[in-house]
Length: 258
Image 1 (cartoon, rainbow, N blue to C red):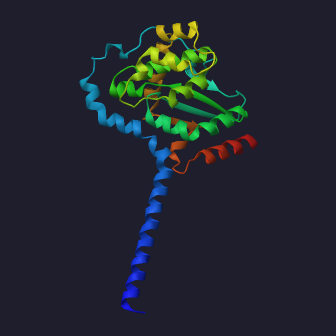
Image 2 (image 1 turned 45 degrees about the vertical axis):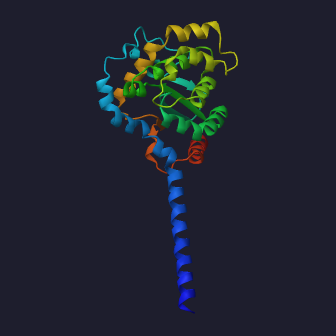
Image 3 (image 1 turned 45 degrees about the horizontal axis):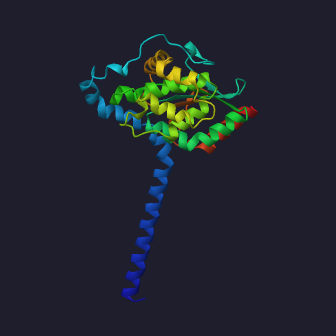
């Protein structure tokens, strides 16, 4: 074999090896996307802690007042959980979330079809706990206002549909668009039968503001460090770096059979 041909084959092998490494890295990034997304809001906390301190007291509307009025059907300790699915399901998924949190949206985007399927089949009961981590990090009231509106939707029996609409229309993390009640009422129009006088009054009055704040306080005292925090039958599934919607479904199915 000539030196020229040998060099050509060696170069081709090197290119092939480099391409394989590139593909491996891309696949690794893809697998880590959902799990890695869970720390986005935690990293945001570290990045903006100085900003939050500097802005302390500037946003006088950022703290809710009034009684912690739980929405209809709320369950769990202190009535802080909004349940979706059948009470008799053998598996329970607890989700702590913030409607302004981009990592929460990433989780929703990847897992929503599976969660809907498992809940609708009676195999999984989901407990949603609403917090306002981003309000505390970046200022504003979008997390609070959206949480209150979602609780108002729960009063109307439309929580899951409105919950999904909020994530489908989530603004940029630094954009406090959800702090505008009119925007939330506009989005309610995407859910059949939700935009009623009762819903609008609940949103505008902040009927469940105190409840959202109470849930947020429970989150802070729990020792959890970021949203979303997702627990399957008491185990934080984000500690499993190999977790996928398919694996979650398998775990739930196994528990259902057991």
